[in-house]
Image (cartoon, chains in turn orange, red):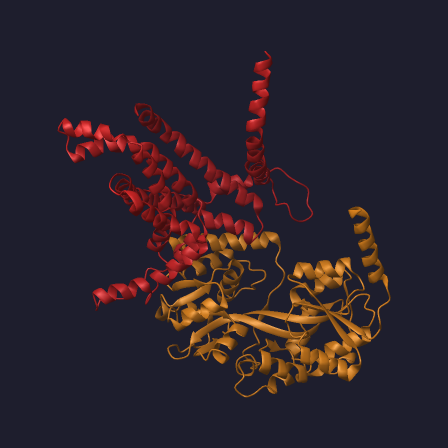
Length: 350
Length: 287
């Protein structure tokens, strides 16, 4: 009984998947609550194009890839972190995009729009949508930030620095501080030494946005590694005197793009949806009402209110010239990074 | 003969479930982990299984792992010692001095922390120990003008949290030993002119050794493998072998190295127990 029920439901699922879907549907695969599924945005898009929008969600990049692999043709638009775009393209999970179909394409910041992470064999596989940083936040009332990452190592802030207990993040920062390519550092000993040198500086490790804010209020630190989106919320939503520094050595950056799924039943609607997502209309409302990461659309950034964090800090092209984007890491590299960080922590604990 | 075989069946029926339970809950997971600890790579991804000793070698070639192991053993020693120093007098007092309803009430107070979630207990300590926290304010209420007391992110904080978490084990095991001491032994000693100190050292302490030993093992073993207490209370000072093992599983899915380090930890525990057993046996047999 149970077995036949399972077979029946499996057949039903297969039938549903095989059914030709209405051409007027745009099926989006994204993190939940990440911009594309804002009700007002979906409604505006549906009203102007006649397409209906359906969402499905993933909880990790691996899950996103698995969903694309196991359900070809089930999606039209998919959000892919730029570290995974080429992999998805190589596996044939997404298809090339004709940039002419994206009317806002010319307004996207060239550094993000033309990133090599979105291209395979000259074809465009992802439209730059949003980005953000892991860099340094500081107390604007107590710290003159300067413009170097070595503020973390500055004896003036000894015992007043906080970092996150995260091996990849800290190895990346040390790689930037020692002038290396953070995704493929060749001088690991320099990174080891740089991290060891951080010992007298470190006051505490933080582990969540909430904890960061509480400790900042309790004056536990003056300078700390932080995420740009979170720093924006600390300053805007909580009114804390938080400044954000993008050092001349560069910062850790992530970049999300919107891609066109292979086998999309409605590529035309999908491209319209992507076009709407990268438009200033959508972004400005998203950032002002909800709080968004930075937009890859320079025009959209300039339409934010003058005092918007995203415009003030991340809107400066000079500051963002030296960003290094996170690339996928092999298991071996992750293990090496963790070993370096654990060895360093053993030294901190002594 | 028939009675003999029926007896055997009865024994099998009665003990079987317990052994099955042990096999399923302890032996199987442990042997799976033992297997992984000798693999080159973890159970994820597409690769053939390959025997390797490299994760055991890592412990002997990487100095920081040995340092952290030593640190964990030290931590276990400190916590156990403090639990004895606090727990034994408390148990003695409970067993020999307090009677009736008061004893029940005090027992409840001792066991109470056990009923709360361990993480909640540790987070509560971070509130107590931080600057301008409960401890800081209380001390300043009594003696104003002292410098700020900040124990967060320190070795002391880890020890405080762990002692608080594990102290009930010591009190309960010692209580059982102390309560079983026949009152007439002490009366006899007193009637022969023994002083309190002599009674404690010559009669009570030796008779309490089983309780002290059981409590020490129950505390020492989990403490040297602990990871979230050191991490939450110690911050940058809270790295121990337990946190390294945990990170192998949670951060990089390196089950083989995590497993190998766990088994080295287990081997060290067994060695310590083996070294201590002659002493314990001697005491147990004299009782």
